[in-house]
Image 1: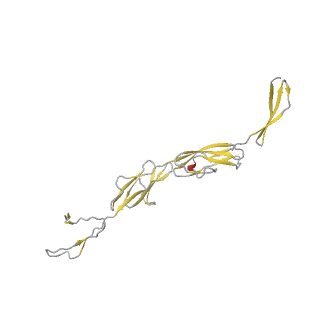
Image 2: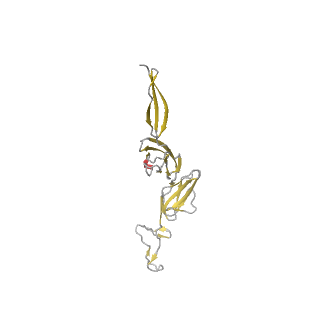
Image 3: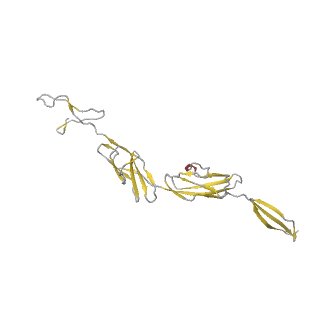
Amino acid sequence: MGTLNQTLTNTAYTNNQVVYTITPVANSCTGNPFDYTVTVNKAPNLSVTPTSTICEGNSIQLFAVDAFNTGQLFYNWTNASTLNSSFIFNPIATPQTSTTYTVSAIDNTTQCQVSRNVTVNVLQQAATISFTTPTSFCQGGSVTLNATSGSGLSYNWKLNDIAIPGATGSAFNATTSGIYTVVVTNSTSGCSKTSGGVTVNVNPLPIADISNLSATTFCQGESVILNTTYVVGNTYQWKLNGNNIQ
């Protein structure tokens, strides 16, 4: 018996099937042709959101779209902790740092699967407050609060979450009790960030007054009792002509 040869002719692709017509040949003799059908299931034709850039703290909606529009896909996204859902085609992402997401799409009918990557770049803006003197002081005192400095930055200081009129410098002199924050905005990226709060305590001055129970003009050998308002926790030092009375 000679070598068996075969030729493929008349291939066709219809309804996910490829039909091969096989003609066997051996010893110069041609056998009867026969057809062999191969089924080729379409993989999802998946496209995703292009690389995007957001500011720290912001969100972006991601998309995974099947051009075949079969409507039978099961989705699974990585980095699920930064998504509102990892099993839908359009999750909302809130990454804190630049993150690459991978989405896998599986056709529930054919079990064909494809994966795609999408990167979200996160621009970060620092916003901190520093100070060199105590933030608790007596009425009439102050503390200078300093924000993150840098080129192209603008500032908006707030007291108890309310903007302080005209407070747009990198430093602010605080004289009122409350929680101070500053919003730092980068003019290049357009990103803003609010600092953590710094609590300032302004302690009121103690009451210092004198009252008398009798006349302050009297004869030698007599006296007058002088009183001041008493407050628990206060200490007192009487003076005569500016000098401490022992």
